[in-house]
Length: 511
Image 1 (cartoon, rainbow, N blue to C red):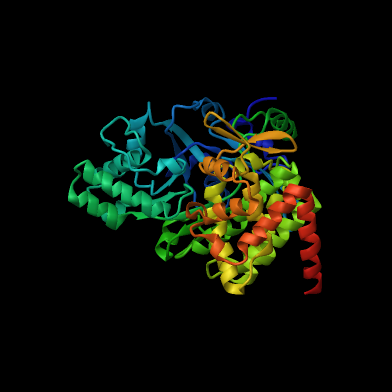
Image 2 (image 1 turned 30 degrees about the vertical axis):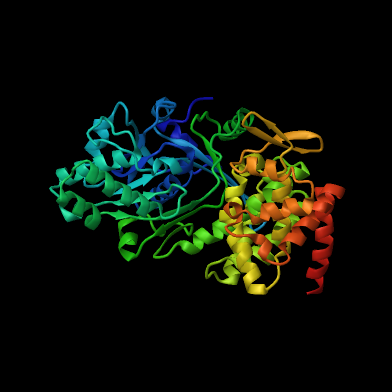
């Protein structure tokens, strides 16, 4: 079995189980500069560009900049920058599979050893789009010198590229570019722009250049949503390679669902020529509804289900969703409580449809998303993803959301710290210790020392750093949470869940 590379594409085009572009794609000009070689960008942004090229729409390839010292580019060189995207998912209850050989990438450059080649791209008028995914810590203001070879930070590298372009084209207004960060932070485009402008001032760059940045370039906020686990484990990789008939060291797996929402008007649509090739790529003046749908339904359900799944003994999301009781809880949670209470103007039918998409994604047998990873920084996720929806529901209806209240009680029970070892904290379920990786672990360790359960709950619900307010003041949060915790202590989490479902599902059938 040989490696995937350009010369064997002709043979692979005869296979019905893999999508391959025509040879003409290798003659397309470079139009996109991408910071980041990771699986996520290759599985989402590059997926759209590859699809556009196969449709004869965009007709441009990507130059990728590798900014970190980890790994090397040998696999890209050996495989002519080709790699396979193995998409697996559930759509409308049915399994959907797709294998695509992506030819979107033309070159991979090392910032450390090939920085001059990166700056040369600034002189290319065809390069009009910059994409990044440097993790959330990549979009940070640090003191940086754009004349370093290369600058240390991603914003420093981008500023150096912009300055080289400004010089190359003499500040021509038409030489500006579209910059689309995909890092998972709110207003990522605007935040990156503010850092770039501050760095420009700190580097003493001329006012005309700073004006050119602000007036001729477009920093777009964007939201991305696709689970891209990347390269599978050795056993699964071997299965896929035997199925495909070639070896691929860059192969990545993804779920089928994909969304890239870019904030922009008609001008931005015109400047992103691959817009319109896929319904998962949207460009709208306001993308907040997409953010709220993802944050409240997908992330919120993950958060409220995370502690519950762990305490019930489930390791992965799909394993939990195969359990009828857990699945019923998540379904009712999303459809009856979160969807109608999203604190943003979202049509009920849109929220309900999205919640059903999320359920399909959770049931994907090919995505082994671990609850242990989801449960890290649990407290911060409760505050950002759950509390606003919880308060909005109570404010709308005048009574508590039952499933969310149960989820808050589970969170508190999960955070019952029984052991401190150095700086590490542990909870216990069925006699087995589990690490609690949360900055609030010490707080919970202290509060769970209180003799009275009612007093413990009161002290926890009072902490505004967790909830943003004193939840004891919302009646009857304290008594409801205490009741669930008493049941979990006496009867176990699973039995408490079953009792909840028996009571509330009966109410559903009567409504």
